[in-house]
Image (cartoon, rainbow, N blue to C red; front, side, top):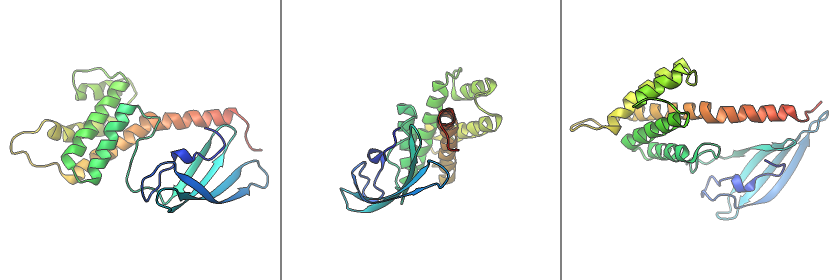
Length: 206
């Protein structure tokens, strides 16, 4: 929210420090027949003295930005996701980076089940909860089938047996990839749609 660049919300891609920047250079470009202003900022990290470039633009009530280079390591979940779901998702992503395939599968499966229950899924197990959300139209058919695949792959790591082989790295990657899509569909897309409606409900460029 707001029309000033949210420095506090930018992570340094080099040292991971968050919100510790000073503006070294600023340039603007305005549309000839409109009010929109494109901003180009070069920021200097106060911790490691590295530079990042930020491209951003503000509307009447909010602004959006793109940063380059972007951090290779994920340090936080999107703030509009429920905290517990974001925590499990973040652990799944970090376990993928660390090549801890079993742990990644378990954390992704846990995040999925927690998200389903956030939508008040009914059932005594994950299979029933997936089916319930699909029957209610909350989960599209194609995502229902993928969710069951995730459930089956995650079950092996969540309920291990003696002599069981380790989780295949490709399977762990597929589980986390589905989780990314599911959480974006469930939480990020509705937020983006609401922001679009708010923007269209306000003033627009001619």
